[in-house]
Image (cartoon, rainbow, N blue to C red):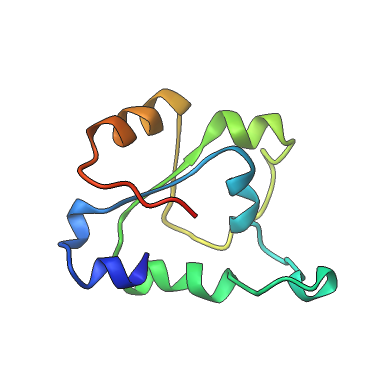
Length: 97
């Protein structure tokens, strides 16, 4: 994601978190407890690279009982799933992780 930002204007990149992907943005994770990589530091760099189009699916948050959760990013937009699907439909390229 960050490598792709080097080849594009930051206003051309939208980052979308939906379904179980919303768990990636929760604060106070301890991935080492389940022998996983710590991706939190990488996600915090999104603000440094000024990737301003960062969307979290509100329905995914609600379905997982995370409405009152603390998030690692400050500048995110909670949007309807349809909004994310529209971004994906209109995208020139889509990278999935």
